[in-house]
Length: 171
Image 1 (cartoon, rainbow, N blue to C red):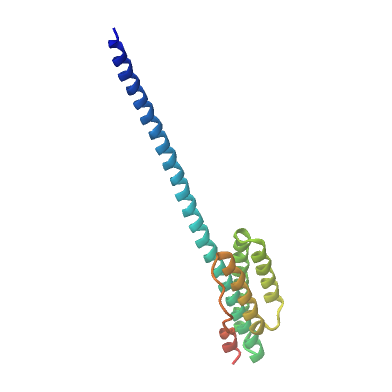
Image 2: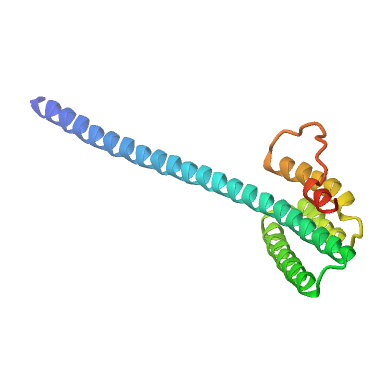
């Protein structure tokens, strides 16, 4: 008379087992989905960091190129060089300034406010300065400092690095 109890218990155990397997599979899929999202986010963060580093380096390099061309133009003017040489250097200066503005636009898109503010100020100072060879190392070093901080790089002590290329042109 109680023969049906075994059948019911066996059926119940089977249904519970199926439900447990389904629930376990669902949890595993959710965990995999979360892990995939974390992995994608980590990769995105690494890519953004690399892009920011590239833009910062390009900005400092473009500012340095502007200084070198500007100093070369000033030296050639002081020497009384031919007009075609002066014209060629003015064209180079225009190109260097255009590149500096292009990279400044990239900095403005990717950098925090303190870095953007300093970069804009640096460009304004470089364009208006009559003492580029003297001022650029200070501007460049401050840019390095705030850009390294934004990238999470440790600060290092002051490294004396004058604007050698510009100084060499003036000799």
